[in-house]
Image (cartoon, rainbow, N blue to C red):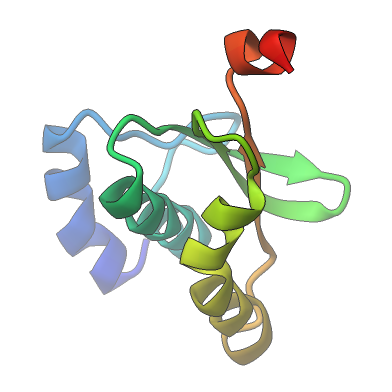
Length: 107
């Protein structure tokens, strides 16, 4: 566990944010995925998130459920930070914005 992970984990734990999946420790990729989720949450307060490891391709996935007509507007909120994580930091981070089932059924 990195120093940053140790420092962030009490605050995230207090906010009921916990790693999911087979890993139960706070890795840098998990914390960064949570931070991208918070960027989205600043613009879409009703958004919900699930962060978990994935394998196609291997990496950390943040699924953001946002009640919007077009998820492209959500992508605009986080794309710069996501590219920084992928290119500059070399992290396998992916964000998947999805619409709630009720919104999909209306369309």
